[in-house]
Image (cartoon, rainbow, N blue to C red; front, top):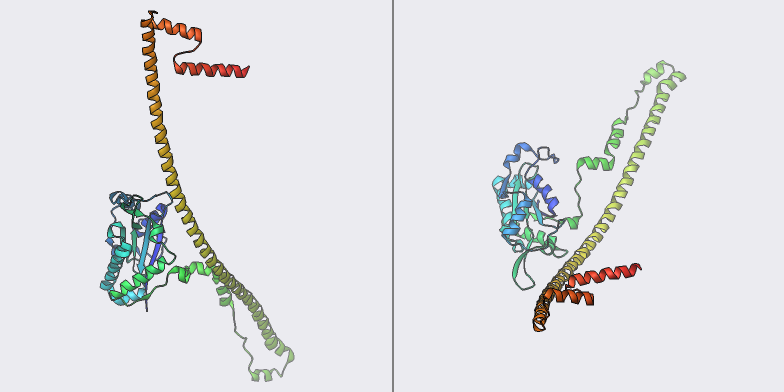
Amino acid sequence: MSYAIIRNEKLTRTEAKGSYVHNERRTRGHTNKDIDSEKTHLNYYLKKNELSYIKEFDRLKKENDLQGHIRSNSIIMCEMLFTSDKEFFDEIGEKETKRYFEESYNFICSYKNLGEKNIISAVVHLDEGTPHMHLIYIPVIHTKDKEGKEIDKICCRDFWKGRDSYRQLQNAFFEYITSKGFELERGLPVEETGAKHEKIENLKKITNFENTKKVLDNMKLELPETPNINDIKLIKLNREKVEDEIIKPKDKLINELYQENRILHKELSKQVNLVDKAIKYEKERKEIMYDNKELHNEVDKIKSEYEEKAFDLEWKYKSKIKSLEKENSYLNKIIDKFYEVIEKFIKWICKKFDIGAEDNLIRDFEKETKISLDAEKQIVKEEIEKEIEYER
């Protein structure tokens, strides 16, 4: 029986551009040799994006007021692949194939309360070996901010929270699609199978296929023609002729077969060693992937804590700066008022004691005391005097 297959991939801005080029068939020379350009017109959309994935993301983020800290390397969207095997689609026919992808689209619209408005594009490809659908969406979670206000936030980490999140996705999709009348078995997630698909060309390189095939093709297991027993009688058991025509050709053939067998054994030994290394590599790869996943989770946790601390620190600095600006403004007012009072005081002194012009009084004061009433000039003067004293 065929499997219900669903896969999810996280995309940064750079990766989203690559997916857009492939899904929208934006290049002429396809690296994927399974694409039949003569069938590309058969592809269709369940939701058509009018712009590129990046521009659609920026538009939806603004229109839907989506929150979240977005950096240049952040995961901003995800791509889901819905498919099964070719035999399944051939058996159910064109109409049911279309319904399969429509139901798959309906499934993701309601999965984790995502909502159709957060889906960027959904395109069905019929120009490759097996029909499949690429669905691009923004991982939006419905939550509350620090003030308790309901918000929609872009956060792939929380959308796929939990080590078994993909297993839950597989279970949910299997239950949904089979409830719609499609007879399928549950597909296994990649983290369970650890499967990796290799192209035939890569597989040939890994197994040294061409060299082994060449050795096998060149092997000859033919035996030389043996003279008829009557012919042997005719030569009257001539020893030399028997040796030259029967024994030596056989010995030569046996030696050639032995040498070819040694070469073949050597090549096959290489393949066995390669397989052993591949098994060892696969085991180590799984261990590394598990450790890497644990490390990735730890990094995500640290990043989350860092973002919260950075936000709090930023808020404290802004608050402190605002307080200093307020205090500075108040001090400026005091200084301005001080200048105003001094000016009035001088005028009052001159008038009270009939001293004369105000400028003369200020000049005499500054001359006798060597102090300027202009604070800025006085500060500059004192700094110059300090420098002169330091140089001495």
